[in-house]
Length: 203
Image 1 (cartoon, rainbow, N blue to C red):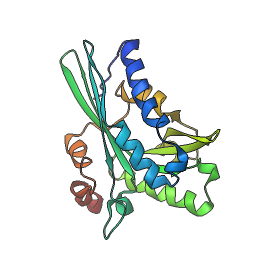
Image 2 (cartoon, rainbow, N blue to C red):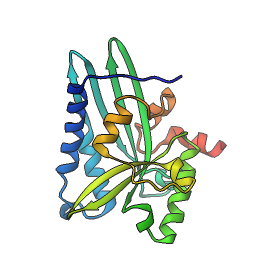
Image 3 (cartoon, helix red, strand yellow):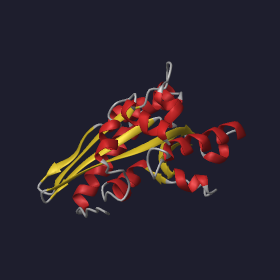
Image 4 (tube, rainbow, N blue to C red):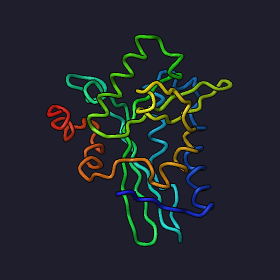
């Protein structure tokens, strides 16, 4: 079932500002490597983006385990999960998005890295129907993270995706993107993804 919300411009603006603050507060020189940058960005995204007469928008995030035996990133293909809890007119909805993060656009990656990303997207597809790739683009000495469709990458459409503030307003706030299955939303709140591991093995 498709769930959509329509919020007024003041809510859209609040969400855009929340995400932009998270992005702009991370100097690349202090978070040069992708894992450090991603972890810092997720920490800054967590919180209440809007709460008022039009409802509420709250984000939480999970930095998927990437180190140690059986680390979830190896078998799930994911680096991160973002969960949005959105309330409007008494209706509440939680959606989670699973994503891999890459420093640089697809065409800038080495052939080995491109092949690895394709495998990672396939791994995520076993867990959720719409995996994402957060492309961390270098722009004028800074960074502009963008969210792209993993499914599009699999069929050879390597679009730049949407800037993170635009993505959250256009695709998350409207709840067009994200997995609503309750067991999935709960599972991605644990960085080990332990609950999803059984599902991955069965597939």
